[in-house]
Image (cartoon, rainbow, N blue to C red; front, side, top):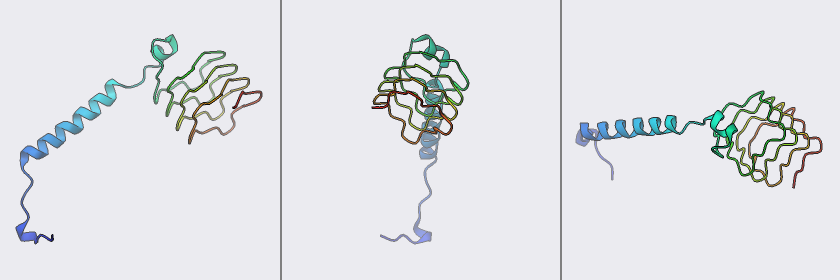
Length: 124
C-alpha cells in the first residue's frame, strides 16, 4: 500500500526514546562483555573474543575449546600450543609461530594466516 507524503504520520517521541535506550543498552552490554586477556591467560575463562594477544609468548599453552574469534594474535608465539576445537573466526594470526601446535578441528574461518609458521603443526 502506497502512502502519500501528506498522509505520513510522525514517529512518536516515545518510540525514538525506546530505540535510543535499546541501542545504548546494547553498546554498554558489549563493553561489559569485552574480553579480558588477563583472565583468559589465567585460565578463569575460555573466551577472549576480540582481545589483543599480539606478540605474546604463549608457547605450549592449552587453549582447548577456547573462543578467540576476532582476537589479535599477530606475531604471537603459539608453538606447541593446543588449540583443539578452538574458534579463531576472523582472528589475526599473521606472523604467528604455530610450529608443532595442535590445530586439530580448530575453526579459523576468514582468519589471517599470512606469514604464520605452521611447520609440524597438527592439522586434522
